[in-house]
Image 1: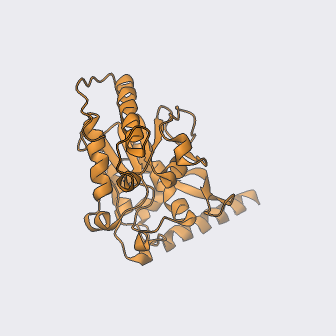
Image 2: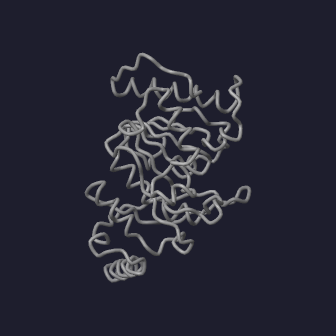
Image 3: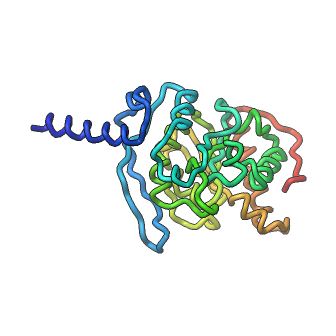
Length: 265
């Protein structure tokens, strides 16, 4: 009886994946691992928990191809293109944003608008090369209509893909930008102003690789709306965070960076 129930459940899951129009080779890669997703539901105190399969792939290139072929996802009806990543998949510093905007939808790359340009400037000032030292992704893969925040259901749908992406990149450090990224990656429910700049040590978040450190940052769009460099302001605090990420990066990777430029702070 148990075997029959298991076969029935497996068949139902395969049927759902076929409804998403995923290629047979990709369906075959779906692993048995599951993750309980706890997502903020917008209203104070509300939450949702759903059980979802985490897709598993042999390498980053296969995952990218699968994402680019994805259909049936909740933001597909909005008409936007799939946005996967920019940077180097071998990089040890990963930045996770929230959702694509207009320029990201146009180029197919995350964080290429004004927010992304500011992000790159801050990290460059801390000694990181955006082309070789960074890997940049988002928690959802298409642009939400009218640039609204992603919904709980949208975040829950795309999160297994993000977790698999993180597994394949295996970064030493993850920077989450903004509250939605922080919640999706770290399952953190406190406000961003209370936890930004704090380290989440390996093992703090079970869904992340065993050796990965993580730190929440303000989203760069928030810095654009609050451009003052006064001490204690959002931009000043983000520069403090960038310097701490540099310190930890050097500590973990044995790197050396001698001339830190604070011009972007």
